[in-house]
Length: 82
Image (tube, one colour):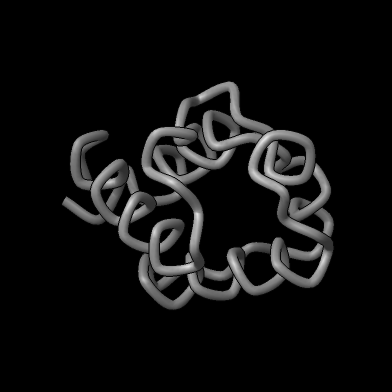
């Protein structure tokens, strides 16, 4: 999967959750910058798992705090979906 495909899917997920497209940057922190609480972040990661057909282990969830970190994680997880 390409970075452009990941960007497009994440944009669709986040805007679907009410996040402004203008606030979507790789440095955007889910809680601090996007205003997502812990339940919203859980919802986001469940949506990501569904959209990308992957399973994010519980131990990895806490590591994903920004859009950029999530993209990097997805690039690694989807590298073999070509």
